[in-house]
Image 1 (cartoon, rainbow, N blue to C red):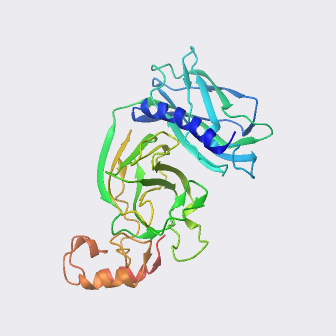
Image 2: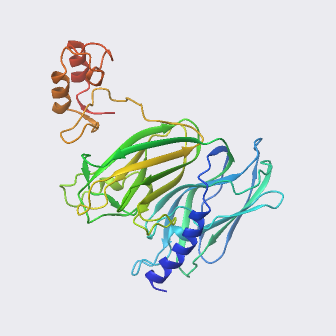
Length: 364
């Protein structure tokens, strides 16, 4: 099987999965941990007891996917897209999950995904049978799952937020290419939102441009855009755990111009949502992002109030430096809340200057 034929068959399954997607909000209600395992040509079955008081509609899955034995010559096997869990509830209802997020390469991949509204509100107390299948088994190629957590979710009212933003005028980076490499089409502009979630569960981020291509990403814990002027800098791959491909070839079947991420997100974790220009040869575009989940996202975190701007953008850059000092001085003796540190909404004065100098350097 060549890579073109294999990808075409995956795309047919993904398109069906996307057309059936409802983007319904899923609240996390129960989690169980199972042992690490490897998966090749023989299914792995786990009978897992859960105790959940809410009715169960969906499931979630988080794990570190690794290529244990891989086709490194052709890059055909295994892919994380080959992972196909089938979950049976205690009284027989089944969710067949054909595409678990995943990546179109054999690179290690941190899965953090969910499948919503697949059960007809089943009882959450009892034994759920999880069968893990390799949908494209090719011996001896083997995938591995580490740090595996299985989740039950329940449908709750959607909390929907629509944001209209643009990559035009944003900072520059060399965007990741899938999960493992750096695109050769940059440097390009990007837009980033740093946020936390109010409720753990399943969230969707659907980004749409009116024409052309786009790409969106989610990072967990920290975001380093890398240095677009430094050859070989791959800092932008650290902490990346999911992406949406908006050129019409997405593993989840979205049409060109639409990039979709469906992810399990957890209270207390810090995330970074990035929307990127596609290539240096295409324009930076306005985009609309619709975020649907069981709770609101909070992007008013203000961890580093002295970090105002860098040389290229009005967005914070993670460092308190001379550009922030110049921004403060340009607003001296005004009541500009964007430059006030010690006393927001008050006059920018020496107290703000002292706060800035005390915070000089990288933000925590």
